[in-house]
Length: 457
Image (cartoon, rainbow, N blue to C red; front, side):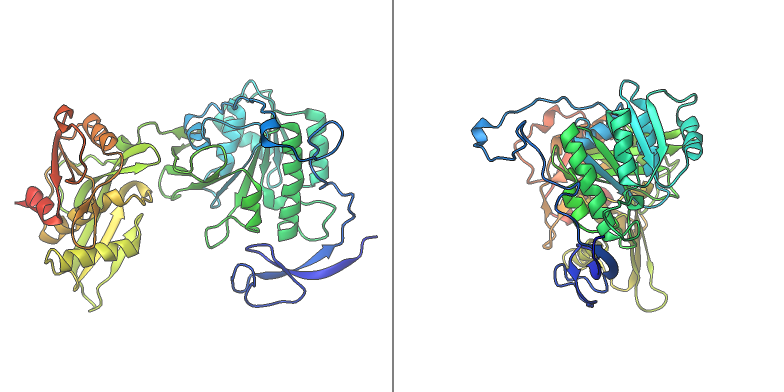
């Protein structure tokens, strides 16, 4: 019998301490230590080193002699998911998908498993029974498929037996926080159980070239529950986000060893599952019967995809003395900075007024190129004059009031022309582009005052 002892483990980084401490010495987090039972493992456990050659030796070799095996990516039959993954699933990779409860993580992976008609899928659920999964599968694909095998299991050793018996082409784990292994005598969901279970599955994935999709829950801070080392162990970390009160869902790449982390996938939640949104600009732009003040159309780029989004601002006199600042889908600190620029450089007195800002559609946008659209929407609401319909804006606002150049300006102009806009206002410092070939009118400004004169004079 292995000798057990009690240790305290940091839930943020996985650091261990023989006693409870308030501040983690490794990551600096406060009140993150939890008591767990640690087991002194035998050195011949399942987590031995990976065997890289037929002799059983993991020997070093020159990089010039390392052989490359060109394994084609697995097409998930989902264009948005393929975009975020970098072209599809890489054999032997481990993908972690995190998100809030009820956002649609299980629907996304189950829909992917059902659409792969030419691959054998093993769907392991530690939260739902096969009957519950069947009910969701009937909404996504009535009649189901014979290539997706469902099992309800939480013990890692039994999952390995199912892998040997089924020999799947893709493994789905829903979720990693429910798994446990006999090598650790702690409760499921603890730091040591998550770390050990992931390490065992990672070893199997690399040895068998088996792609693995893991679903992970998030904590109240918004990060994936469990130790931070979990994100370091996997190859790809995807964040599935969105407001449950809205129909749109955003799939972002936080870490990707096989592709770019700047890509973005957009889905629409429907009763029959998730629908790919191939042209999100048309859905994010509301159709108004008349021009409204405080509304502007800003050109943003998420990854390689240009988006035309509607930004809304409401400026009113502060009633209780202290003006309120509120932002939805936009960084509040950046909003305060833009308000300070408007007051100092442009002369608009907004210090005694409430400012409420919103990005329509429930999106969260971090592209600095929407600064010009934000400032124009705020001014439009302040003076109660609507921006001329058919106008969109792209530009970063500096602290001195200058309009700084933005990237991918040709794509922004092309997207605006495709959606039927008549003119676009861009920074003057974006040079080297032949705007005469553009299908819409391109206006260049160097200061925010110039943009205001074009819009409201």
